[in-house]
Image (cartoon, rainbow, N blue to C red; front, side):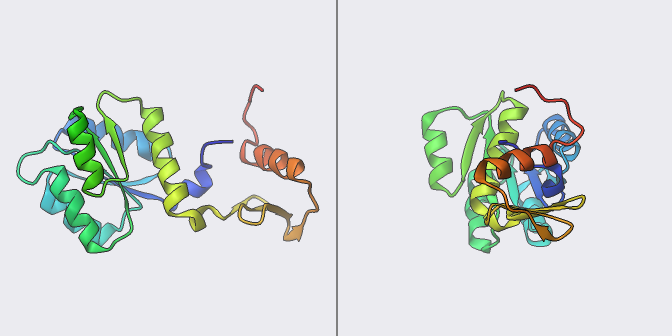
Length: 182
C-alpha cells in the first residue's frame, strides 16, 4: 500500500529543470503517464519564473547546467517562500556534491543513472511528508477515504471498520479492477 493513488496525483504539479533535452522529455513523459501535471525549464531564470507562476509541489533540479547551476537555483527557490519539495537529480555523484545540495536546501538527492521507479517513490515520500493534508481525503466512486481519521464512507455514510478492515477495504478500493498477487 506504498504508492499514491492516481486520483490523488491529479492535484500534484512537478517542475523539471535540466539542460539535457532527452532527460527532460523522458521525465516529463513518465511523470505525465503517472498522472502528474508537469512543466519544464532548461535554465535557471526560466525555472525561477515557473516556480512563481506554476507553484509546483515538487521541483526536480539538475545541478550541472550552463549559466546558473542547480545549487544556486535551489537557494533562490527557498528564498521565494513557495513550498516546493526540491529534489536534485544530477550526474554529480561526489559526497561533497550531495552534502552541498542538501545544505543548500534540497530535500533529496538522486544520482543519474537512476531508476524511474525509485524517483517516483522518492517524490511520493517527499509529498507525503511535506504536504500531508493533500492526501488526507480522497473520493473514489461512492467511497470517501479519510487517511487522517482512518475512516471510509460509502455514499457519505461512515462505515464501522476495525483497523485491519480499514486497510483491507482501502487497498481493495484503490486497486479495484487490478490483478494483484499477495
